Each structure stands twice: as structure tokens, then as C-alpha cells.
Length: 445
Ligand SMILES: [Zn+2]
Image (cartoon, rainbow, N blue to C red; front, side):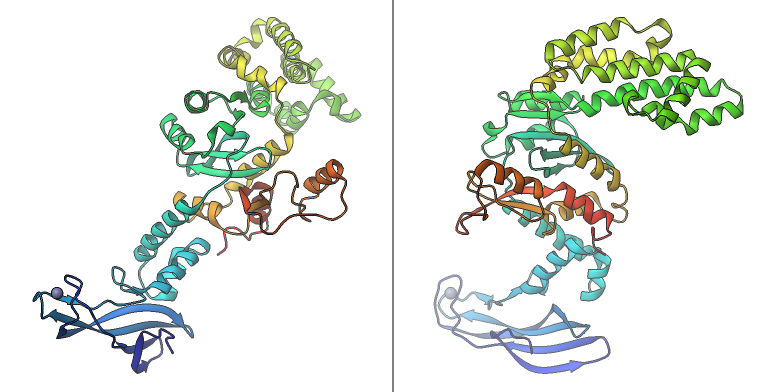
């Protein structure tokens, strides 16, 4: 019944909720742990209760009659070993392992109820299990490293591999100290060539300190977003000064202002022109936003720099205060902003990260940060592996983009990889994680 060969089952009691299994250890020669002598004799017994895996929907308690022994050589007493049992937890080893695995997939309360222990016990086992996984968790150090922010209760730092669109790690906060100590543990950290970030100074400081060989790049998305924010500020200021009927229009047509001019439909353009003639300030804010976006269409760094200075010079007095955060940011970050023009990061990455940020607030309720982080990093589903041999991209049916790239580069018909090659763990596939969150499969209940 137990399938623990080291124990002999003496008796099984069963009630509506529980199994009580009374056992005795299969006698074997016991040596004194102090002096190794085999001359030992029984000095008493005590009955211990261990929890085991739930069976047929019932809690399982295993009673073990543990013998206390006395050594005839050295005179000391000791308890015989209890194989397969975690004495600290009063559980079988297999139950401890099972709880660890289950606590990654399900809420602690549900696991606690199934096993018949309290939630705190589940949480402790979960912590130990996560530490164990953490010690084994080795993700390949990215060449393009992305440092971003994600909100799980508070802002957290997400470290990503931009090329593979994967999460490499999630840090508890965005402090320089935290980021430095994490980056310092990266294996082969000289591999990192580029680090992209938002304009958060501790990221730049940490990157300079630990990855001096890497080029820091400010993500385009974060820069452009500032232009939208400035324009929105002008719009909101204007709206509050308008009579209610006109106000409503400015709210509904907000998306038109956020669109690029060349993407507007004829009707949207008509509406925009109408707003512009009614409210010249709004027209001016829109123009500044569009001109700022046009900096990123520049074919070179020098041209981008030229466009920026022309843009800055064109900010009129009424627009100054709304657009001044951009001028300040440019002053502090122009090197990293302009680096983008030499090393543009992929939009595919930014888009998938933004999708993750968008769906992230759907989850998180009911889970601690540690639990959610572990679920993201250590759950099997979304993690991404690739064959270690760099010459051949592993062709996967789920990733047509990689497949296409591999085909065009090597022109072979059949995916070739050697199963003996160790796999590289690239981290957690962001699009797959987003897909799992959206379809309600993550985190599993
Ligand atoms: Zn002894």
C-alpha cells in the first residue's frame, strides 16, 4: 500500500477523511553513528507521525515506530535512521517534493487542503523548493540584454533576452544595488554587447559598473512615449477650459491625436484639421509630437541629432512646460538615445514586452511576488530551449520566424539537430507566456 520497501505495514485504519497507516522499519543491522560499532541494542521506541501523499482523496498519516538504540561500545544512545522520511517536516520525502511541485502550479490553500496541513507549511516548502530550482536555474546570458520595468504589486526589474524574446530573470526591485548584484552573477557576462533600458539612472549606473564593454541604449518606445505624454498634457489643459459639449469631442477623438499623421484616414484627417483650426495650441502640440516621432525615422545618428536640435529650437513659449521633460531627458540621455540609431532593437521584442505589461495586471491577485516570479520562471510551459549548436537554429513548428530564418540562411529541407547536444535554456518565452495568461491557463488555478 505504501510502496516504501523500507517499511513494513502493520495495520491500516481508514475513516471518511483519512488513512492511518501503522508501520515499522524493516530491521537491518544498525551501526552506532558515533563509533561505528555494530554492538547496539534497543533502548526504547517512540511513535512518530509522518504525512504522506494523499491517496484516493484522503489524507494519509504514516505512523512509524522509531527505535532508540544504545551502543555497547561507547554507551551513547541514538535514534535509528528513518529512510525516505524528512524528519524536520514530519513528512515523507516524496510528499515534500510533490508539495513543492504543486505549490508552483496551484494556490497554497488548495495544496494545503489536499494534504491536510496548514498554509504556512506549504509556503515554507515552496520557499525551499524555489531556492533549489533557483540553484539549478541557468539561463544563457543574452548578447542583447533588455532591462525593463514590470508591475507586480510594486515596480520590478525584468531582465530579458531581446533576440529570443524571453525573460531571463525578474528582480524584486529596480535599485542599483539589486541590479548590480544580479548582473555580477551572470555567467560569461562579457557576452553582453548591448543593454537596452528605459531612462532610469540606476540601470545605466549598474550596467556601466558591471558590463563596461556593453553599449547602453535607451529603448525608442520610452522616448516616444514622452512626446505623447506632452501632447496629452496640452490636450487635457485645453479640455478643462472648454464648455462641456466640446470637451466630449476632445475625449472621443483622443486616439486620432495619438496616431501618426501618415496613418490617418481621410475622415480622421478631416476631424484633426477641424480641431487644429479650432484650437491652434492643440495643432501645435500635435505638430511637435509628429516632428519628434520623425526623429526616429532618421536614416542615421547624425541626421537624428540634427533633427532633434531643429525640433528643440521649434518649441514655442506656450509649449515649453509640457515638452520640457523631453528636453531634460535628452540632455541626460542623448548618448544612449542616439545609440539606438547604430543598434536598433527589434520592434518584435518591444511589442511582446508591452503585451506582457498589458496582461500582467490580470494575474497577480492572490499571489505574492515570490510565488508569481517562481511561477513565471520555473513553470515548464513557457520556458524556451534551443539546441546548443549555434550553427543550426533548432526549427520549431511554433516559431515560423526562426524556421524561416534558418531556411534562408542554410537552405536545408529537414531540420537537423543532434539530440546529444545539450539544450540551451533561453528563459521564458514572452509571447507564449502572454498567450497563456490571455487564455486563462496561467497561472493555473
Ligand atoms: Zn558507539
